[in-house]
Length: 498
Image 1 (spheres, helix red, strand yellow):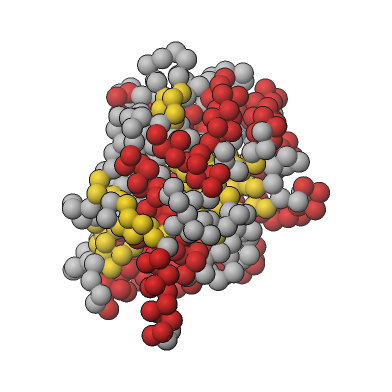
Image 2 (tube, rainbow, N blue to C red):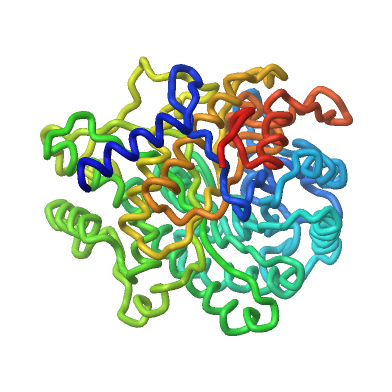
């Protein structure tokens, strides 16, 4: 880039900016057709865990274990009671002025046994009513087919580590497309594969609480990608022409910042980005795993005495099956990690972390949230989008989650507003100055809700929920009022420029 161009852009950034928490904000409006939304997930908000024919899922099973692995013995048995209060939730969305609502379908509510031989019509009716209510208020439904709640019958058979999962998932997806596809035009196959596979089957924190580090996550990854691709192809073959929808997937991860500008740290950053995002996006775009992922796992597997790589291989037929199977990619972004190469390599260490060859951390001095894993680093949003736009040119992106937690659900949540402002400013920069093709943004979350193994201790909601009240009373936080202004003005501050 010419020096004059750099100077001109710096003048623009200065002109179109104000400060929040000492950081410059881009005050240009988002494009008129840019969509703003809010999100939840079925187990985190619905409750009604054993009502109207719903079957048991993995979270029903986990939260009822004795002793409970969930903080404070919390469960999602009632959660926000959105199963009974969906009309009230839609009225909150209308109040926010959002263009869309991203929510997920409970597999075990629709197919109680996990299999498609029995469809629970009461479960189907619940989602039909929710979709009808959204459309009556001109809110577009964006539907996630799988957001971590798996029928326990399928988890008992190994869950996503078993090839058996693939066709069972496709069966479920077909039921979803058939029952809701006339009214739903945006579909997401899986939410956060890395959380499902790495945290679920590698670390044993989610799914079935069984850990198989360095093996289980790769089996899960391999099956998830094949299930995603088969579902996308099935939609393309059987439903797209009549329903005219689009199907994508949501990938999550930190921006990976090199701890210094040394070549070693830059390489470590690129490696971990490929293990985090490339592990999923690269096969979908190009048909196979990134070279550095394949090389690292293959090499370490041989040195560890395995007869074949711990990372399974796609057949040539599967490469063709998977390549090109996404109409858009969703990105869940919250925070950033610093990285540097690992020191001496312990070859006996069979784990995802060892395969990356990278050490990551979050500096103590970075701004905290209510979640230990979420440190505030707004610049990471632009850097991540820029990296994605550069590595996957032509791929349409949407931010399907971004948000900030506290531990008390305060109504005066200025820190959440500042977080949103600073992240959205960097997102706007990525669109304006880096040419990133981004068509929407989703706030996580509409409501304070059940945050998995952390129970109700972490509050992400734009609306406070009183979990001590039988009515699960919702109250707008200051951030909800701010977000409602954003959705109407496309502007993160009071006075925007065009």
